[in-house]
Image 1 (tube, one colour):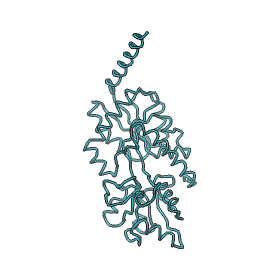
Image 2: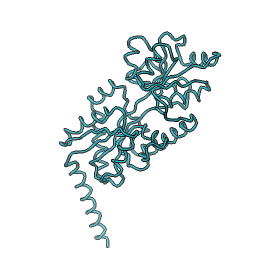
Image 3: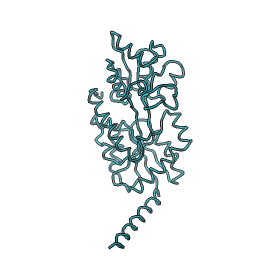
Image 4: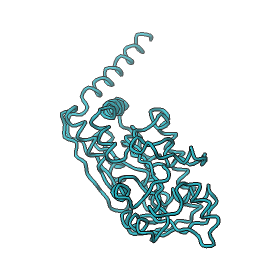
Length: 316
């Protein structure tokens, strides 16, 4: 009996090892949903030479990620169709647009980057810090306005988080795009907005906007002089957008481990780190990695669901 079990275990090890060594042996589809797919393309550029296989980034933007998520969900669980998903997939699911709950219906492999947000105000604004902004808002007979690139976007929810934690009455002014929202703040039409650094980099460098804080847990590499909301006393304000690779449930663990290992190596390459810095991306921290990943994703989904409900977000 003992020899039988040893034989079975040996066989399983051989299968596992063979599966890992043979993957990949054909092109891989790397599917993204709405929004920029730059993270997927950067990874494809890093992994294609290592794997000696073509990695084909595809963007299926229809229905706020629904088509992209369903395509991966229904694909064969062999590691050759992967989803490059962001936090926005969970928002579209919570709003009933995307029927696929990627965190619970797919297998998370590895987080590839996080994108923190920053709080910007017009350069000519009378407040030079978050404390001064809060004081101004509380003393003003008229409510301050904040811009966003649309209802239900992550920057919109970041502002709603700030509104709740600071106990301010702020008025949301949604625009059709983040670029339009940024221009409205730069011109002084709207008093503030949360956005990603790449969206406003030009306006900041030209002196039309100033940055008061970041929503990440720590200061950003690209903005070392900008304090985080956490260090300013907003103890619950850790708000980011994440990007994560997912595979269909049932994908062999050997394949999952292979992808995880090789992506980890790519994330530590100086070339990818340089490209991340240019785009405002940050590397995932310990709370986003390995056995902590699924727990983080579930908690983040719960947070977004609660924010959407409390903010009574409606999509136009």
